[in-house]
Image 1 (cartoon, helix red, strand yellow):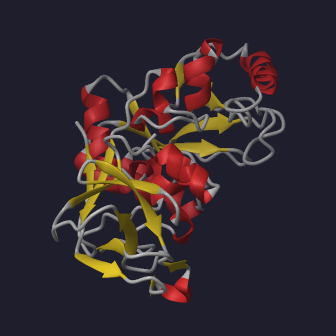
Image 2 (spheres, rainbow, N blue to C red; image 1 turned 30 degrees about the vertical axis):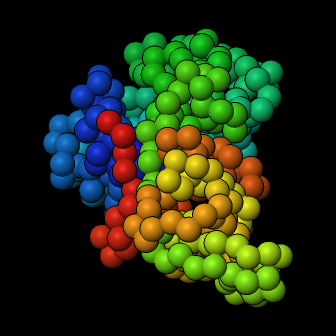
Length: 308
């Protein structure tokens, strides 16, 4: 699964590594995402998981993509995976139609593999019953959570997503499931200053120093994906955990220091002891959302590193 620019990690980089390690197909959300990968990976099977317009179908046919179809009519001249809704209540047929000659896969989507294994297994049972007669096509239903903890869901293929990047689909420390995070997000201290008692930093005076306090200003903000609700999160500065204080602004945030540091001191926002799952708890969201929100485009200073 390399949709959303490889969950914020860089779709092309991740695809190359995954294919080199034996992955047999890539999955994306849109035809546009698939075309970006097709330019680099000729001949590789690429499955588009989201809906497709008539124009998308024509483009997919020319680019030799696989499309997910969840309502009739089934397009011709392109490889198709029919999606059955077994409990997600989103994309999917209520009942599978008879597969046409160009149907190469049958699939469904688990709603609760990360939170309610019993319901996930009920979905799996329904899917297996509905697809039992179609032994000539690939069947796939497992997401990351099911890949890790519901082995019977693997069937012919597994769509491993967030776990591929070493992030936990359960919001737990990745090591619980033997995962190692691949993402490292780094910046540096761009300014160091001391606040006197009563002085503040950032918009709204959210942080007011109670005593003389050293702070460092990091040139990353919510425009880069370091969200406003990460105030209070911990980052690593010069090898030590330090707290984000004040309001995170568009292009900068402040950290509370225990001493005066030099401008240029490294700051690790994610990785090497800073778990994205911990940030997610502070922001009351998912690690998925934080990772996909990171902007590592050339128009911003590139500060995102993928550990090989």
